[in-house]
Length: 71
Image (cartoon, rainbow, N blue to C red; front, top):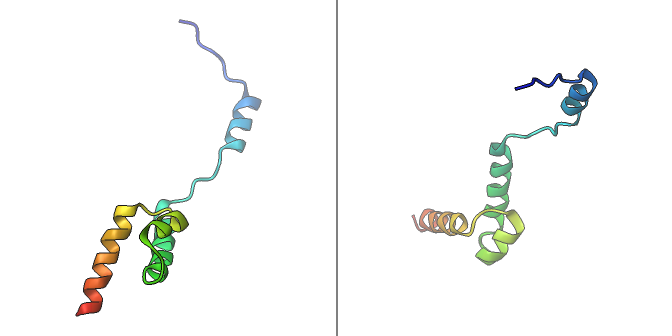
């Protein structure tokens, strides 16, 4: 099998165009904080559309916040 030699200018272009990836944790924390504000006055499906958090996650966190408010 023949080896292909990498062109240095092509490799530099590939490295330069690689997008910067951000960690998911800060983004999720921001989504959850936004969701907590919306939870009392907006429907669960609307929260899903606005924040991008899964519907079951919204339902689970809504139940937890309701349990906390009862105590």
